[in-house]
Every structure is written in C-alpha cells, then in structure tokens.
Length: 155
Image 1: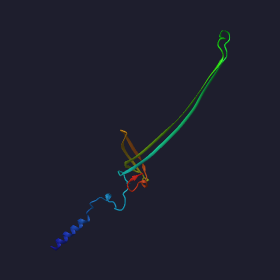
Image 2: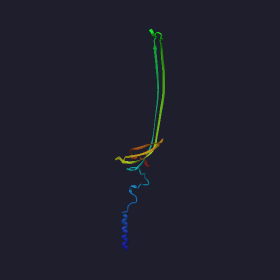
Image 3: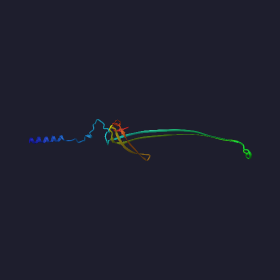
C-alpha cells in the first residue's frame, strides 16, 4: 500500500512538471508598463490636426487717353471746319481672396511592416461625410517608435 502511494505521488509530481500555462507568453503584459505597438498587425491611432490659410490681395489702376486734331478742309471739303477731339477714361479696381481650411480627424492604422531600423510602416483609411459628400482619407507612411505615445497614438 505504501509503495502504491509513493508511486501515485511520484506520477502526479512528474505530470505537473510538464504542465503548461493557461496563457500564452505573448499575451502576458505587465500591470505596470504600457504595451506600445511594435509588431506587424498592431493597431495605432493617428491624430490629424491640419490647418491652412491663404490670402491674396490685388489692385489695378488703368487709364486711357485719346486726342485727335483735325485741320480745316480745302477744295471741295472747305466747308468742313477744323477742330479737336479727345477723351480720357480711368478705371480702378481691387479685390481680395481669403481661404481657410482645417482638418481634424483620427485614423486607425495597422502596422504592415517593421523595418530593420525598427521604424513601422503603417497603412489605414477612413471615410468621412462632408456636406453630403463622402470623402476618403488614406494614410500610409513610416512611424518612428519614439513618436508613439503610451496610449498608442501618434500626434
């Protein structure tokens, strides 16, 4: 009986040595550190804040003068008397144009590739409705790991 008990416990102990974890190691994260995107398939949020303005002012002043002198007629045209004619016109105009655009958006992008220098190649798109017109914002580019915040965003 004693031998069976020793055999039973030795089998139980040897089986428990080969027991694995319930969670895969890749899913284990520390409670005290932030997990930043660093591998293919990770998701980042890009915050876009762009504003542009342009203005143009133009003015134009023009003038036109005309003068003509006529001498008296001779011969059968002697009944036409001499004279002068002239005119002067001036024009002035001005105009200005002001354009301002502002884009604020957030786009979720996916890491498509990790470069040898550890930079991430990201790609993502978003559709937005502006004045009943659907516009597509597509974002592709390279991100430095140091530009990623602790909340996985890029400003």
